[in-house]
Image 1 (cartoon, rainbow, N blue to C red):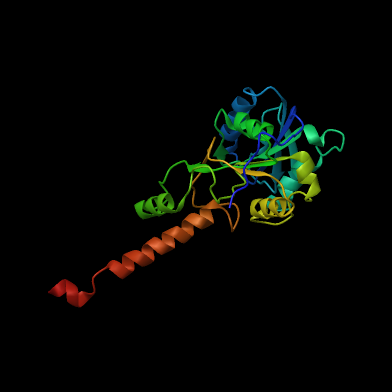
Image 2: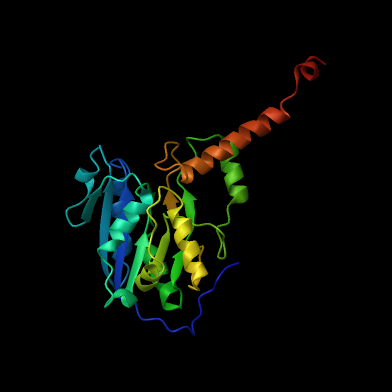
Length: 251
């Protein structure tokens, strides 16, 4: 079931956007992520702030963040705690109603119209934007995994997925439900569940899908990589089941 934004629902105009990017040892992929956010920010008529939360990084992630991008360093090894810490400094009861919180992942690249779509959703009456993703490549996985993903994934409006790589929420609603929980995985699902339980209008949109890495070495036990690994295991099991036994081969 999907909540649909209503043009008749009055909401304050968004004039400020905060984008938080949690990162753990992302020196290779973080530059492209931040460059994509900068392109998306240039497309909207709003003040956009970008903050990278470096969580227990031991690589050169700090060095690849441009000077004009904010940085917060933590050592929690918890993506939920990282997102929560990032947004905490931007909560303000005087401006929350006009502020949009958006988040993506350091191994992802947002499309140029990413923030345009988020803010159009907000203007049409949504309290939260729950978007989709598009896998970057399948080089780390078997062909069966790509096929199984395509069979299971819904990319249109009304989808049932939740991705921290493509998520936005009004700051006042974020505050109302207590923000991201300090957990090491599924913090995005947890936040959306609490928003829905409190009556927030949620736009499960297929617009502006975010290109996300399909690397096998994920940063959390419940992230996209772990989901693809489960598909790989399932694909191998199906291959074993369909493989002929020795007696059949000899005939």
